[in-house]
Image 1 (cartoon, rainbow over the protein chains, first blue to last red):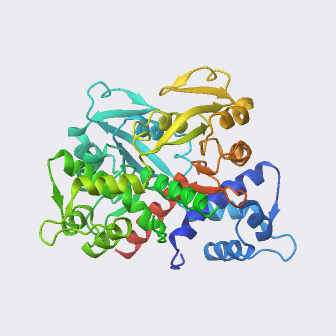
Image 2: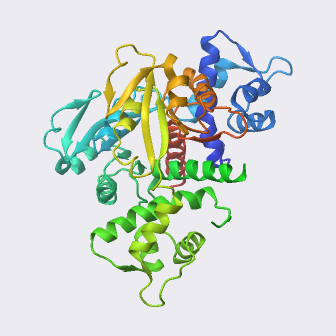
Image 3: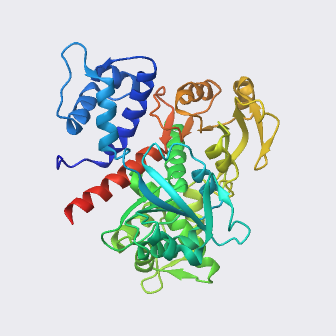
Length: 213
Length: 213
């Protein structure tokens, strides 16, 4: 395996390529060029070529481009979609439940095996086929399930302690949707999806554009 | 108003500060220092001071720090949380419905007035108090509601055309949760939350860490 360094922006593009290529395959396409991918996705041809070269030894043919099927296989292998990561979810509220019902996670190599919540009315239910357990069972169950990733969907005030509990249970990756910034020990990988922050960026740009015009 | 340029990372931190300060106010705190904010959120004191100075003329007192209440007001005004942006949501599936039920958007200055879906079984329902209309009414209704932002939660294949429809209806900001990259006309502000991309970053970092250890 190559030891190239990938930037965050670059890593974020690979699932976008993959989604597009799967669509192409469904349309019956056999070959695709970097130019075509770039045009469809709004990236430069240069960028597409560099990104694809970074994950695949195999080049494209001068005219036809690359084989769609082998690109899909390469990207799925690179993104780890073929071997699922075992995961738990903490906080089965509205956002947490939506993620439990999200059909594509399995395709993306994420296998959510258990959810945890403080609400006694939710304990014992299944949300999108995932059973909901009480928080007190988290450490024991997560360890038993060999969970590698914890998805944190709790309210802000509970997020830090929930993430710490998951780390104690052996999770090495925290995917947090809580509207706060978490501080975790070294060696734990943290990826935050903060809707408030994303909205702030959008609203600020809208206002700046409005002022200029 | 200042015309300072804010980086994306910086903009993303302001809602995090705000959330933390609202928690402090609930605990009865009157003053807060940059040091304390930094320690709580895992940012350097330097960073916090710079970020706050960029949005507020008023400095802190040497010992006590800044007034929590006036910082909250400053940040809410800066983030535009006081004047709500009128918005529509396209695609009331599991993720879209979760966003319609998300209680905090109103506090963040986002007022979702109507949702649109292709599923006839959803038309006429209310999800989290928001009425669901058929797609054919989108342009007319969005224009009538003076919607400024469209939240796109459709499957990948429908995202580009849905966003274009919203733009034709007068929306200047597109907040997309679809797992594709959209290409929109100049002057339209696009902010994408791609769960597949976020997961790819997390999984890749986990694998890289595992290889090093």
